[in-house]
Length: 534
Image (cartoon, rainbow, N blue to C red):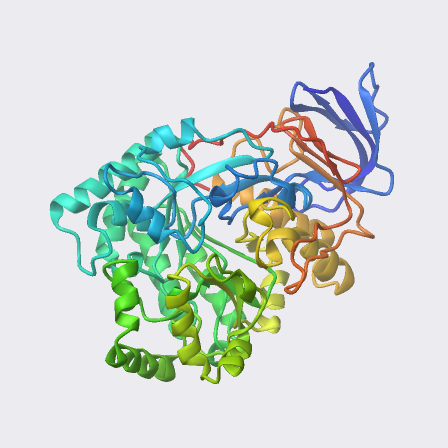
């Protein structure tokens, strides 16, 4: 590991305090000193005049477990200043995979990870076999995966023996080093779970000091009921709850961001340990199949495709969508709001909207969307423009809402360079710093940095990361406050952010002068016993 001094920058330490000019000395992978005019003592010197020196950003909400094995350099994240990613979200994790269940999880995750190779493994083997990466990674085990391994895609409560198996698998994952469990209550099979099932699993988290990360049961028409469900889980279990990519989706629900913030503040005032994160965009991303009622997916992909070949089933789906909007997304302005992102069997349609494809085929948007699921064997991912920019800005202003990309580590080349992924993969953190903090002035720069560093580290229970403190790990990002910016767009997403000058992970240089060094110094950040207390 290099010994070096970052000289003459404005240090924003991640605590929420304003920045001040100082030097930062690093030795043996840790911060050795912070002060003015530090003695070099033979250490390499890095000129940071005119730059911000801050903790490396913590991407608290990602799905990079689907791409890091193929893209360990984590280029799209490193070039945003990210040094730590939390993976295994929304109930989806790539392990455990029980004997005879490889095909099941491969089909289930095909819209999200069509390029991954799955194999039978326990969670400990999964962690031990994970490749070295440029970023640190904290791992979650997915409730959907636990249910899939135990019950398949059956819509029913678990039998006592099945619940005990899920609890045992969860305990094994936590023992191996997972920091907690994620849930995806918006889609099968997580949507089939009742609250008591989750509370039972929460008892394991409580005993083991694990955390709970939840994609709400609904982010649209019943979003406040879903938030209340998360609050009640925290009250009943005593486990720290993280509501991921919090939003109010669907035109009927726009304008409710302040009500949401007030609900969460009241819960915290009662002693509930609950936090949230968001991504700074009006479009979400999901498998196309998840936009429609969850009952379609019961029994797996083949059962889904068979139902979509039945006229009566399609009529039932149409009635439900017309009555309530899309599953978890609510009402959209029109079918131009749904854009093909990644389509393994129909790559020529990437970037096009359902409305455009429907017009070309002479079909309505609803039928075209269902046809597309069949043609691409339910593997399609889409972008869904269903969020109000005013709500995004209200949440951005709040110091209580952290930043998470909900995006994968990717690059413009190789297998992860295909399709048109969400621009948040490349631009989330730079967009907050450049567009929202600097250009729009919605929040001070030191508050923006806090939302990406110290706040996230506290929610995760990290003991020595997320702040610039003597003796703490040297995860450091250096950026130009005048030029930092997102460059990715919906039509041209494979573009790196700009203005991030240097990134150090565990004291090792990973980005210099906006160039990746090729170093892979990231570590697995394993569960700590007291991680559920704040």
